[in-house]
Length: 296
DNA sequence: GACCAGGCATCAA
DNA sequence: TTGATGCATGGT
Image (cartoon, rainbow, N blue to C red):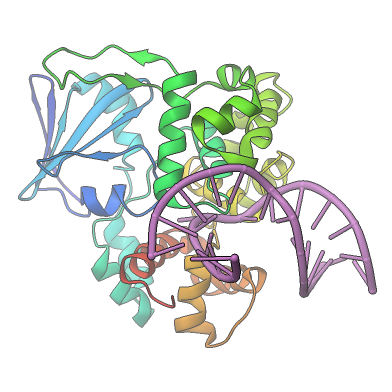
C-alpha cells in the first residue's frame, strides 16, 4: 500500500498506488455523484469541493485540488489509510470472493457525507440507479449551492448536495415534480426536518456500533434495514454493515444458499461468514453480480 | 399492459 | 415477528 504523493499546480499525484481503480470505485454503487468524462476520468462534488480523478498507468491524478485539501479531506474520503491488500487476503479464503475481488480489484469504500448518504439512500428505495442519480442531481441543483470553480477547470456549473436545512424547506410536491423522487418526497422532507431541528444528531453515530447506529437511523422516515446499512457503511465506517438489496440477495442465493430465501436470512448469513469485513465483501459481490447480471 | 428497480410503511394474522 | 400489498416513476 505504499505510494508516493507528488504535489503539482492544482494537482496531487498518487504515484504507484495499488487498489485504486476509478471505474470500480465510482461505479460499484456506493456513490451517485461521480460523472465519467470523455477521457475516462471522473468528476464529483463532495465536501464543498469539485475534484477530478484520473488513472494513468499506475498513478492516480487528483485535479482541481491541493495538498492541504488532500490531507484534510481526500485522504480520508478515499480511505487511503486502509490496507486493502490485507482485506483481500482475508476475504480470499472464500473461493467465491476470489472471483469477485479479481473482478473489482480496485474497489475502495469511500467515506462520504452523512446527510447526503441518508437522503441518497432514502431516494434509492425501489428505484433504479440511473434514476437515483438523476434525482440527486436535480435536488442538488435546486436546493444546493453553486460552487465556485476555476474558469479553466471545465466551465460547467457544480452544486453542492443540499443541507438538511435546505431540504427541510422543500415541498414534497416540488420534490416529486421537479426532482422525480415519487412517493419518497414526503420521507425526504420529514427526515431533513428531523435532522435540521437537531432531533437526531447524525454525528453521534460515528461513536456507535453498527447495531446502535442502525436502531437510531431506522427511526427516520424512509430508512429501513437496507438503507440504514448503506448509510452506516458508506458514511460512518461501519465495516461490518451488510446491506442486502435485490442484487446481494440474488448473488448470495446463487452462490451460497442455493435456494430462494429472504433478505433477513441473507443478512444474518452474510454477517456470519464475512464478520467484521462484511461491508467489503458486500461491495465486491454487489459490483460482481450487477455488472455480470448474476442470478437475474 | 405487466413487470421491475440498491425497500419501506402499513396492516393482517 | 412474519408475510403480503401499495407505492411514483420510467424503462423494457
